[in-house]
Image (cartoon, rainbow, N blue to C red):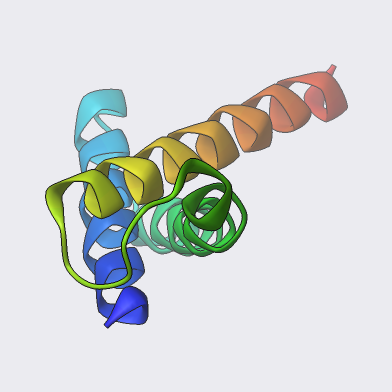
Length: 85
């Protein structure tokens, strides 16, 4: 059930980041969603056990996965801006 939590949180966070940025290209949505899914999985896999998050689809589990996806998106955009210079 953890994978479902990561998919939901990562997918929603990637979609929200695309909507917030006002991007209209489809590849931006795919990129943001992929990065957010990876971040949600890493956040849930690493932060979940260390914070004592119960396995399953819980509100705290979704928040931890969303935090991981936001951090991954932030790192991706910082790297992208640094490389683009």
